Image (cartoon, rainbow, N blue to C red):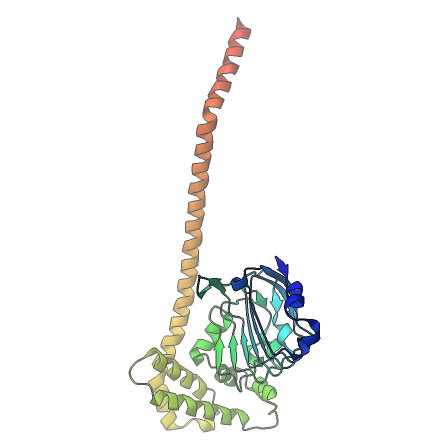
Length: 323
């Protein structure tokens, strides 16, 4: 294994680090077994960071204020890294921490299940106002803070396998729509619009128009259509009463079945997952019992001749004493 610091000193002389704008650390390709803490404080002009390693224990981006793209794939997962390490990156546009692993397959890299171990709250990213893409798929240790996540420029939020999946599915994974419906006051604070009384109403109206435009391009009973209908209903029900017209009430009634179906589907999936997990645990327990029983029987078969011999010796000794 080679420490990150040793690797950095060898490949990036300290004299030229301030001018480096992009770093790729693809350890599966090199097979060097890089590990330890990644200290990039001296890379003042760094804009892109791509890391695919197996044992990342920490990362320091203290001086990298120009970072725009970060992609970290760590298969080690032994040390939890808090999202606070990215809290100062105000120019950040893309953050990909998707859990999984890249493996070298002769001539290409193949994605496997990785075990990124990032944790913390999304509130840590509240200063990343330029964030457009955020991927935290399969990172269940990232919890809470969704209301603080900057959503003005956010176009995609990959959150499957986290607590946010259930929260956002009825809103078709639209973070801004969810914030408008659930935390309008915090959204006004996030956007610096606390004095603007019409801000929330205007934003909901804008989002409704965007969803309506999407629905106009979707034909047939597709999942995408149902998800957008669910989003429309949830947004509409967040509107102040004055914004709810009779025509829109009729649309909401037409879209309501889609929203109900998606909400019910989430409940059923959660129930099915619980039942499945319970079955797996019971099955695993039964298998363990069978294996333990088999091992004990095997041990007994091996020891039985010695036991019988011991009994024979004890019996012979007793008979000798009687005589």
